Length: 479
Ligand code: ARG
Image (cartoon, rainbow, N blue to C red; front, side, top):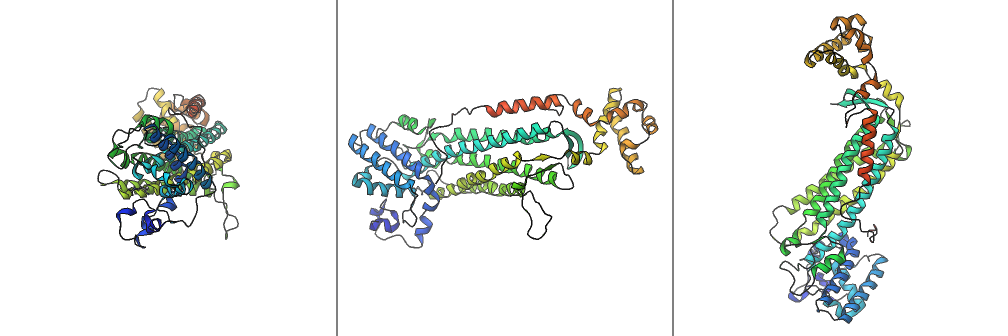
């Protein structure tokens, strides 16, 4: 390593300085441990930049081709692993140093017209594009597993809750589908974030633009972006797309925590509506009988990080003056952590969902006839009684049963009849789970037909390709 590299600047800006960087400053300044995983994107961006400089006649054809084959060799070296224990400040300076080792002095021409400000913004967006494709695929897998579970739950009826109190019966499939739609919206949000990411910053220089006649359209095309940034000062400091991505991640966290909570409740002995497989549960080192569906708690817990990352990034961005500021170096940690967290949580949950077994006996045991109180009130409504009155009448019947310490269905016929003549014949018919769910047959309801329709809609929504095509030439390898 050159003397300048040891000074901490890696030869990037040492000319201006008389004294080396303080040893106390070096570790604060370095970001290599975090941004090392951008090496592929850095090389990809540099290849495109070398070509653009050639097009602008800043580089001769032979210089450009030397740089390109040098970058190929750097790529091959980094393929073996980004070296540990090096003193380079960040991944950009490391790649540039290795390129120098490969091709000598001409390596110094690559940075013409480019700044690390537009370079890092470009690298990170390239990484972000790939990461959104990956998250999209994880969500696809999870939704698919939930739809299979919903199909297995069409026949079963369980208590539907509001305020965690039994409300009305619903098909188990309907409950599962209530978790599908939030994840479907998450996928829309991730896809929207991709569109925000696909704006090319390269060609913005440090802040004021590039003075060489580089064709940004060609660059955009080569790197797979959709648009070229409109303002160089904005382009080097715009991290809105990370906020969009992290918000999508934070909301996935909310949804993970909610389904996690339901799975925990529903698999507990008190509910016993379903069983989470052994592969996603743990035991206790002390209590031999324990079998905890930890997957559900772990994904609920991961929501905290997903929320923290969004809040951290917003705090980082707030109040920054125009242009690039070094604070922005912190952006990567939040982004990487959200993607890493989703990489852990989503596939684990998909696997757990695929192995869930419904326990219809548990559902039946839990269902109290009071779940049909609304249906009873509807019997009166159909006989012409205003709903508010029928609500009152049925409410009194529920109290009556409660006072006698019996179930609503065990009240004698005479009590129903004296509550209202129309309840003489109709009351018993209302006490039927199947009839209750089948009555809710409007689109979005819990009847078999409505649920089957919902499943079909969900399947076809899931199959919709993103409006911005997935770039098949990029692998999902990282690091
Ligand atoms: N490591 C830096 C970052 O992540 C690269 C950009 C440095 N730019 C600068 N002007 N010092 O933001």
